[in-house]
Structures are given as structure tokens and as C-alpha cells.
Amino acid sequence: MGSWLSKQVEPSTAHCTYLILSVFLLAYAFFSDLIRNRLHLSEPPLALLVGVIFGPNVLNVVNPQAWHWRDTVTQEATRVIVALQVFSVGVELPKAYFSRHWRSVGMMLVPVMTFSWLVTAGLVKGVLGTEWSTSLIVSACLAPTDPVLAAAVLQGSRFSGRVPRRLRHMLSAESGCNDGTSFPFLFAGLLIYRGTSTGGIIKAWFTETILWQCSIGLLLGSVLGHYANRALRIAQRRAWIAPSSFLAFYILLALLAVGIGSTLGLDDFLVAFGAGTGFAWDGWFANKTKATHLPQILDLILNSSMFVYFGAIIPWEKFVPRDVTPMITPWKLVGLLILILLFRRIPIVLLLKPLIPDIRTYREALFCGHFGPMGLGGLFLVVEAIAQLETGESSPLPDPPKHHPNKAAIDTIWPVVSFILLGSTFVHGSSVAAISAGGHFMRNKEERAPLLAQEDDGLAGMVHEGGGGESEPSVSGDEDVG
Image (cartoon, rainbow, N blue to C red; front, side, top):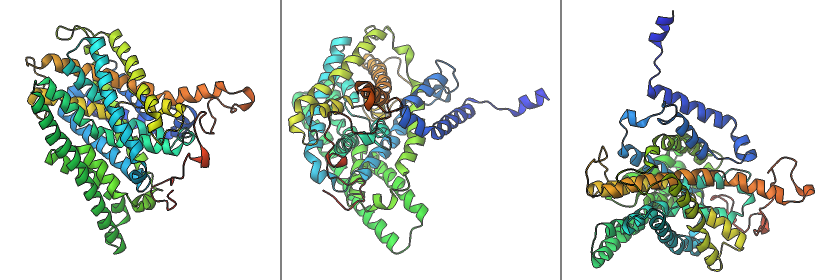
């Protein structure tokens, strides 16, 4: 009997991965309200922890390297998942949002991101002693705020209801845009690394990155989304489309945007974000589908799976000094992480608070400055950077080259970025619990909720007039736009 059973059981790595992933997602779904609204934890850090525990460095059950999954798989998986998320952000924003809030989002995208890029590069250079060009590439990978981590905190939880709606919308809009707007910073760093002349850098950066990849990408995505909305309206009005296909249209349009962007060499994420914004500009689609919770379903399945994958590919062995990167040590990486979390965004947002209309108090500026998580968008960018250094194109080599003129930069960028992404996921993923618990104990005893960190009133030091901080619609489909 035992020998017969042993022949039937097939505990291969792939089969165990299906088992572990599904058990984790089912367990999270089963206790999702408890985890999100009582423990104030989100799925990304938990999924990352699962990937670390079951990954090759601990239990060695989930081991993507054993499946010969290389950088190409990481690149394409993150491309699709982040594009779906930024498309979702565009759809979920209040209708015609940018016509009223372009100034606030613009300040977060241009001066705040530029400051973050330069300051992070300076910190990498100062702590690790890398070349300036390498530091600029690393900092470009860490410049964007991650829409996946942002959505995990800003949507669908008790804590999100305590943050003024205008701040939630602004941070969501920023996270949707800046994965795409980080490409100019990345390619500026790459051009400097390659030793291109100043005139050549400006010409290539402006024509190829700003005009073609970003501007044309955003315009094309917006046009695509607008006409897809009109086509879907006609199909529904004439009863051509089934209800199930109506929801599938959401995902398929996002994938179409990714396909067009990647095929034409455009900025995939700006194409996807533009498509989502153009698709939901009038609020009609969001109003039709607001009861389906489709973005939250995608978050749970796709995003959590990707964080498990990231946890399994973290290069722990490269966090110690090696021949090529003797300056990388665990303590230097920890110190770099702390400095980046403190100085990457907080000082500039506090400084620019009077110029950002949606930020009304310095407590709000501190919150927005802190809440700039780094995650899957950075993972995509670091693979893109490695590919550009390996091949000069967006396609990475199947295996890391043993001898390459850019090997020192490649071997520096991957461990540094992955460590900062790891730390940011845990720090920002647990920030809600820390903020909630801290606010609980700062109150007088008679003002505290019966259970720890279960207050549901607005966060202190923020403006909450009208219940949401401004006269915005709660979803894109609402008609009472202020």
C-alpha cells in the first residue's frame, strides 16, 4: 500500500507551488476582513513573507530558478501586473479627475520625483561608494511609488476611510502615473552611464524618451481608452455584449494597451494608465461595475502571487561582499534603506506643501511624504535596467553573463534595488498598523476604541470637512462632481 501510494503522489516543485499559493490566497481571503481592518495588514508583505519562507533559501519549495525562469519571466510578469494596476487606478479615479487636480499631481510627479531621484542617487553614492551613473540608475528604479502597495492600503479598508479622500485620490493618481514617468529618469541614468555627450544625452532623452515613449504613449493610451468606451457603450446599448464579456473587456483593454505599448516601444505603463483614464473619464464604466469589486479581485490573485514570486527570487547571497561588489554589506544596505525612507520624499513634500493644493496641513504632507512605497514597479525597472546594460535593448539575456564590461554595475543594481524593495514592502505594508496603534495610545483613555487601533474617525492633523476632505465623488460613476 505504501509503495503504491508513493507512486501516485507527485510532489513536484510546480505542484507544491500551486498548493502553497492557493492555500495562502484562500487563507487570506477567509480572514481578509480580520487582517485588513483589525490587524491593519495588507497582502503584499504577507505574500512576500510566504515567498521568502517557501523559497530556495529556507524551505526550498518554491524555486523559480529551478524552473529556469530568468529575467524575461520577471520582466513580462511585472509588466502585465503593474500595467493592469495602473489601468485600474485610471478607472477608479473620480471622473474628469485631472481636469481639477492636475496641479497637485503634477507637483508630485515633477519636482517631488526629480528630488527623490537625485537624493536617492546621492545616498547610494555616499553609502556604497558607487559611480554616479550607477547610482542614478539605482535611484531611477526606486523613484516611482508602487500602485500595487498603494492600492493595498488606500482602497477598501477601515484605515483608508480615515484618510481624506482628496489625499487618497492624489496618491493613487501619482502611483498610477509615476511608474511610467520614471522611464525618463532611468534612461537619463543609462545615457550618462554609457558616456554619451551632453548634446547626445539631451537629444536622445528628449526625442526618444519624452516625446516618443512618454508623450505619444500617454496620448495613444488616452485615445484608445476614449474610443473603447464609446465602442462598449454602443455594444451594450444594442445588446451585442454579454455581462461576462462586459467585465472581461476591462482586463482585455488593459492587455491591449500593454501589447500596443510594448510592440511600438512606448512607455507601457503610461499607455495603460492613459487607456484607463480615457476609458473611465466620464464615469460610466465605473458606475456600471462598482459592485463587482473587480480591481480588488485582481489585487488578491495576481498581485499577491507576484509578491510570493518576488520573495522567492530575492538574491540573499548577494547582500554580502563579493569580488565584484565588495562595498555591499548587510549593515550598509540596512543603513541605506533607513536613509532612503527618511529623505527620499518626506523633506521635499514638506517643503512644497504650500504649492500642492490637495495637501492642506503639514501632518498631511508628512503622511504623503512617507507613503511612497516601492514595489513591483521597481522590480520591472531593475530588470529593464539590467537588460539595457546587458544588450542595449529591453530584452535581458537568458543567463547573467560571467564576463561583461558592465558586470560591476549589473551586480550592484540588482541586489541594492531588491533589498530596498524588500524593506519598503515590509515598512510601508506595516505602516497602517503602526499609525493606527500610535494614534490609539496618543488618545486619552476615555477616547480610545474598545479594541486596539480600531478607531474609525479621521486621522488627527488632517482636514476632513464634508466627511471626505473635499466635494469629490466617491467613485468615478457618481454624478455629484464638485
